[in-house]
Length: 87
Ligand code: FES
Image 1 (cartoon, rainbow, N blue to C red):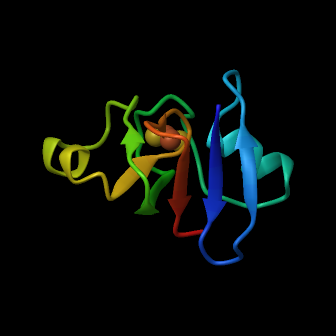
Image 2 (cartoon, rainbow, N blue to C red):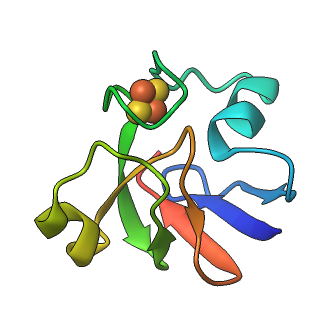
């Protein structure tokens, strides 16, 4: 589990082991664009403000992956205890 912080509102959510960032956003009525929900299409790519993503997608290129500044929120998670997204 880790904490998701939304930079634009300051809201935080706990993301459990069996949840995704995208699922939790939807449950809380945030409309984040998505399509495949499998880390393939790139529709859900979101900018990371703080924290380090643990990439589980197969969409981002090596440069994006290494920079840690973008992530696919349908499958990827936080590597640490908290991640802050530009949402
Ligand atoms: Fe397709 Fe996330 S919705 S990569």
